[in-house]
Length: 317
Image 1 (spheres, rainbow, N blue to C red):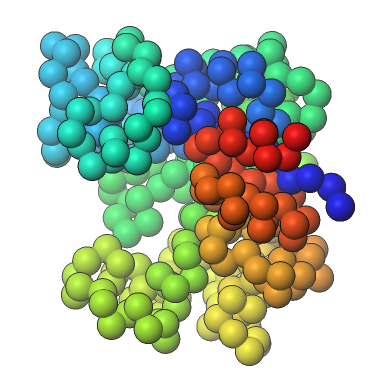
Image 2: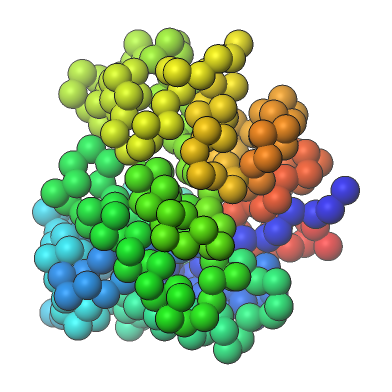
């Protein structure tokens, strides 16, 4: 059985500041077999690398050196040059998010990168076979907060083509509208349809009783029950299957999907086997515990994304 690809999630956020050139450079130097990153469109139409649709206050400081507080600027409202004035090289002391990454090494002065610069780095420094998971990010519940999925896909395809890096890239997204459009205009570029944890979107899951009315969890589950627009019509409700997981996988396979990009807890021997039968490559996020890395590797999946590429490398050596 082949080993899964070792993919540094956000460049290896457990070790270095997420979604920065400093992280990507070090992940490549560590011999990670790929990196994952998140992209948005800036006001001037540049593809910029950052997780949230607005600057994340747990990692972002302004030109004055002060930590940002919410509400923070939307990426779509800032030019790439304006974004470059913010420092994203350190976790904010005392922030709950910071507690997740106690071993992260800060790099003061790190900036929000351009995807074009990441592509140039990969072409220059990565080994043959390297994979680049490019997540096309939209605000699922309110597109006014982010780029339009079609516009985002258009920009991502255009840059990927212009940089001659199509064979290295896999587009991933929770917004299947973006993936469907990208596949329509660039059928040769691989994709993987991303799914939220099934327990969060299954209307019949016991966890629904704990959803706070009007909360993000509640709104997402309600959208799933009614046919979420971000699924682009590839709807689990129209699929046959004994379980919610089976119906979801069949919905993905009904679309222009090359793979399933899953929360790791949803990947079991049953779902991995069904994905294989449906012709879907399986990759999963985000796996930082060694026991879970071992479990998933034993299932023969294509790729494991981790904030701790050092642990995964050692485990799979």
